Image (cartoon, rainbow, N blue to C red; front, side, top):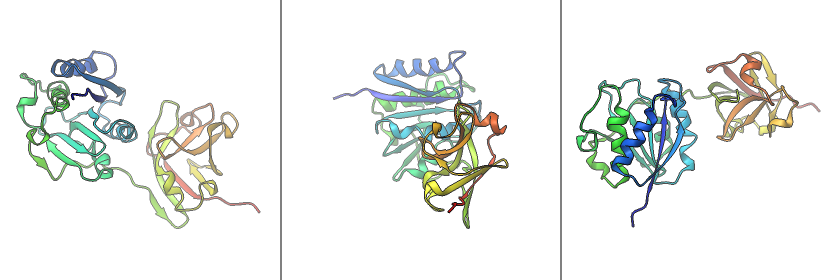
Length: 268
């Protein structure tokens, strides 16, 4: 029995100009029986890393047959490939610029294809909007059951995104701020599991920009309003926050700031 498919959209298009609507119009023209979920259209222009991170921390909450379309494509019109990646957790359609590489590193048994079969593209292809003319129609055909092996050749290699890894040294971890959310929370590349390699999560301290946070909090209001805290966020990454305020403003911080987590000094 036919079941409608979920298609998510992640782009840097913004809400002005109708670009997200163009993707949806193309998809609905091919398969009107889809459900759309806009993960976000507010990725900073051409910021492949931000798009990759956003998709990484969201895709696991969708049903396993979801199709994820991501269009952050500074190489549009060039010789870069367009990919379809099938994993146990879903199908991903987007440019071969590293956007999906963190997901593919996490997912076993991924099958990755180049989408090159013109049968799944629109008849007229622009040089500047492959999201509308190639990726959206390909996703729509896939949602109707188009065989992935007919999209194009299967690939054994694809672009890898440079994803900063935390550095583990004696008694501490060095990481970086990799994302900032709309609340001004600084999201690091250090996971909650990483902190346990030093000691119990309640026994570590965090340093950033000359400031020291003496321990990890369990919730935001555990500290007074305006005070900095470190917490393992909902995506299992350590975040620097300020209760009822913005850590970005308090610290004048930006993406790339060094963060050090070390054993806290326990008073006896």
